[in-house]
Length: 221
Image 1 (spheres, one colour):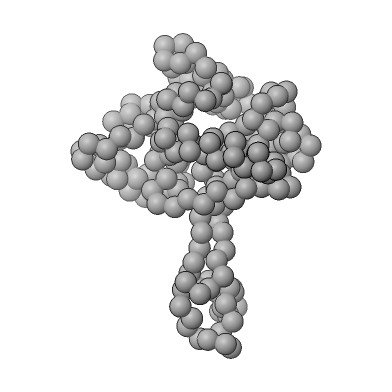
Image 2 (tube, rainbow, N blue to C red):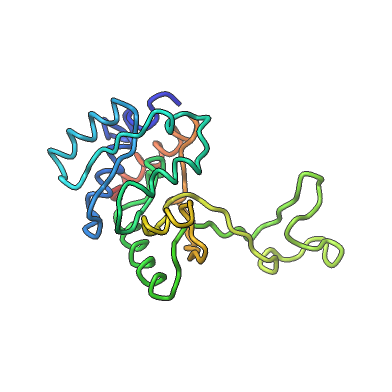
């Protein structure tokens, strides 16, 4: 999608980027808000927005070779681990418009609790308690020889990574070369917060939902 992150969205003239920066700006526990990009439009808006709205917002100019669609995500993640020597990285995406500041506060609180229990990272997951089949047309997560159609609540759940957020110390990213450590805490979440925008029809649908929420007096920030 062309200009997906900066085209107008639900009354935000600078789109999903503006919305996400305003959401993050309400999270007091965050020391810095880093926007990694090699898009000059994103860079210019982010710098201007940071100067006027929140001094914690900074642009991290992404090397062009890490901005290509052909670049493996693993290379980009290794790069992220070099952005700061210390502290914890909260990696999120502007394409989840319904992750409000209160959701981020909950995630940060859960990370602190998980870290105290010995976890080295946190990632958000969506629990799948449903019938899943493989490409051969066979049940994947239940035994049909025991019960053709078991109750869905009796099926062992699987978990989908929904990419809402990853929390992990920068030093740990460098150690494991990943945004998930060796003892991650799986933070379950569902509902509108996990809705993501990749395609044009998703953009239109989530914009309609956002406008409906605003009309009903719900807060997007």
